[in-house]
Image (cartoon, rainbow, N blue to C red):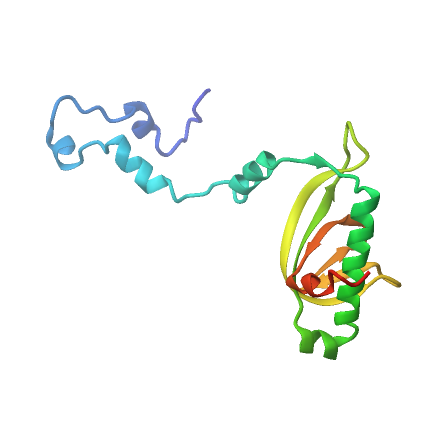
Length: 165
């Protein structure tokens, strides 16, 4: 590259990088930093925001959506019916304070070998509503979960209704 004729720092550029031979006064005053200190200085610096999370997301295991058998579907419907009766409206939901743990399927875009690819999630909390008529959702804490994605529902209240058909 040709340097422009009126370049202000031409003399500095031509000198090149400073060279320190042995332990001259500059090197004694400013010794080179060991590599271990470099790591401490630059480790907290995240040049690519969200990069670590993206790598962790790639490590998650995606599975095909499991198909429930007839017995499992009937049991899930029975349990959802019980929850629907206990959380009929906001007043009943606050009074009964039904706690439950649901396992559900969260789908992602596309799947090669199966109809739907995604992750199986688990959520625990208070059941606020079960709407099997209009929205087909169950609301636990602030999460709305589609009933078509439910795999199982567990709660201590089901033990009281085991003998009821």
